[in-house]
Amino acid sequence: MKEMIEDELLKWKFKHGSIDALQRIYEKYLNSLLTLAMALLNEVGDAEDVVHDAFVSLAQSADKFRMQGSLRSYLATCVVNRARDRIRAGRRQPSRLDDLDMAGPDSNEPERLLIFSEQALRLSGAVARLPDEQREAVVLHLKAGMKFREIAKLQGVSVNTVQGRYRYGLNTLRSILNGEVEK
Image 1 (tube, rainbow, N blue to C red):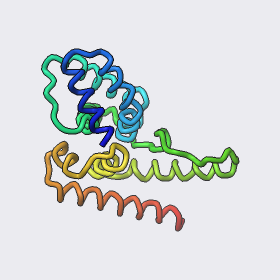
Image 2: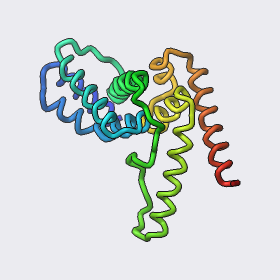
Image 3: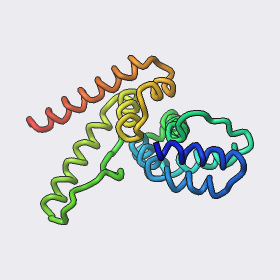
């Protein structure tokens, strides 16, 4: 609730020309948007460019800014749309979740760090093998925290379709990861 109130205040201040509000929005959402872009593009430079472009577009729209709803979802939608443009342009590489801000083990024990790294690489490879629509549904729901109805609106499909993509994506991930274990 506190985040929602802060976001509403930030939106209002931004719409009325506050540079400080834009800076706070940038600071608040930069890491999560970079994580999202990285999960979709797997290229640090492209991910940074996509997020940068989203914030530049936001800054340029201050005078006509009329966004209603979640600021987080709005920004995630901007990043996803720009990532899709990059994908269509043929710049996409398979997603690698190990480059994201995933929380690692709390210990500095080399064995635990190695195990975590191996698990992250396996998960990253599995996510990269998902079809684009499934990967997007899984990443947007799990990493960006978007609700299925928000993803449905973004993808231009029904909520049931998004839930199906998400479910099939998770099932595919399980199959891929279980298959790797059995080898």
